Length: 278
Image (cartoon, rainbow, N blue to C red; front, side, top):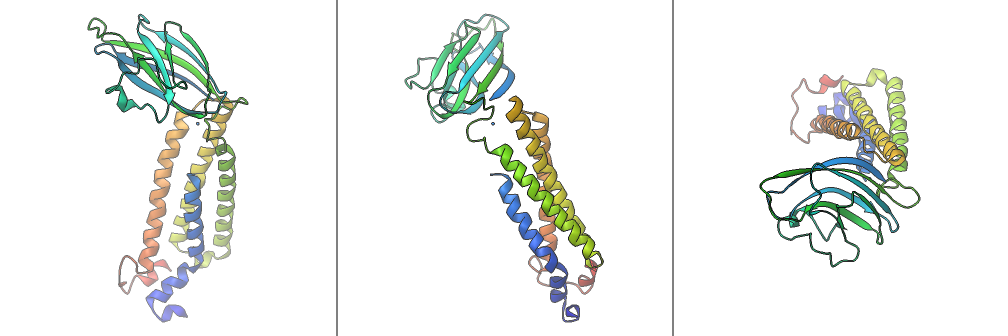
């Protein structure tokens, strides 16, 4: 038996069947991470300083996309404005440097007066746009803050609820979910067929696959709900991020254990090490 020749060959034989599975995990892990929208938000602006602004949304539009916004204000609407501008032409950091209260020079950027609580607008150029809420009056120490509740519906042509650039994600996550299910089935059959040769590390690798499948399944649910209803499900979004971190941690633990067997992280193995996986 090769196990009698030396510890390195023994470890290599034990993990030969696992190596291809690890490569598959690496490839699919890289392929996982290749947003209309209906939203309600309350934005608080400061009246304690002149020309204050706050970004509350970013969305990718195609030409002909529609914007519907309904606003509710806790006090006077005087000097309240809404600014819609191209993603690269205006950013939050510029609020402190430049005033967006002046009429925009770019015809694709729009400045709306919130004296009218209802805003309807059609996008004329494909781009990602930032949405800013502005207070364009003088500083008013009598009313330091004002709350503005915004209910908005952003919708691309053909009743597409997703942002431009995210259209393929529901289909892509469906395909990736199917691939992870197939990989899990292959691992399970291989484990059952060669169970007497398997080690605890094989079981740990199977757990990583289950975690990865759970992450991509949650992502599939998130994008399906988003594309059909226009609502972002924050719970699914946070859950996906948390489980992704857990799955990546488990995956790299497996890689470190395998690297130890291949003498990558250590140049020598103690005599008891080769038999610890039998």
